[in-house]
Image (cartoon, rainbow, N blue to C red; front, side, top):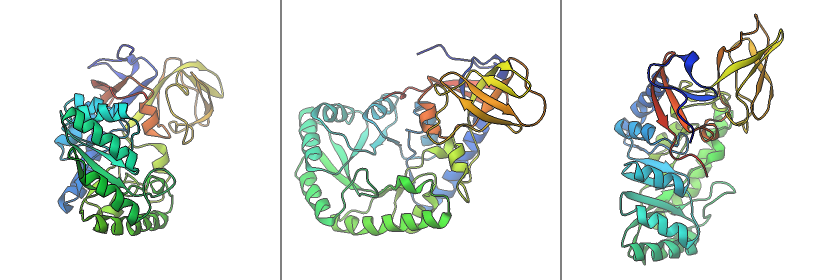
Length: 356
């Protein structure tokens, strides 16, 4: 882990680049907007920590009314529990007795749950909790696409029987999250996708005799909240945002809080070059968005070329903020989040759960 790129009180031009910036005013406004809209409905909020991988940001979400965090990997779950997050859902499957033992271990320090879609997973979790003397919550995941999950009531009942037979496991409910719906551009397509997910999940919920259904993301959470089926939502990107979500028709009502800061290291009549490339900003959802008058025209490991569309090229050392196409993998490239008020650094947070 490299040294922090800035410290409290530093101004924008003093930040070592490339750096990951968080606009605290936008971050706090995003929390206030979503939590203010959802909590009065009685639906719980469990933000997805895979978006920011930062315990401090997670603690602030919990302080604002979230019941806990989601993690998408066992490593994330271990970091969040170790940092004092008291309720963590590993909203994914794990396989192997080694991982089951690690998960059972942290279940002795917090309320921990995990998803399953196969009897062998249940057996490994049962053996691990028996050895550790801990209790794990378990959710049966409903298939919503081609990733994980079960597709029939019969499969769900068989899993539930295995869970009920294990003293260290508790059936908590059902996970039904349709990730592919989050970035469907027309709102009608998102609504149709979530309606299809509800049609799959409701019979499984009823067959298991449970009431708890968790899922939903930043792009669809109002649909799930209004459905009457979901009792908990898992949005992650809402506190950060990115350029891909901005392309949705009727995009989520949140401010852009996350930027990657680069510095001009070469300037020409028609272009400037920044010291931030693939290793600083993810391009799996397209190139980053530059300020007005500039357009990305090339990106490599350590450089982004910005074509000058309007005005004079920026001078050497000029700091330039980029909006990442996809916030989650961009955060995963950085050790630190530099939290700003305007152009002044207020705090620096470690991205403790980054990495595989």
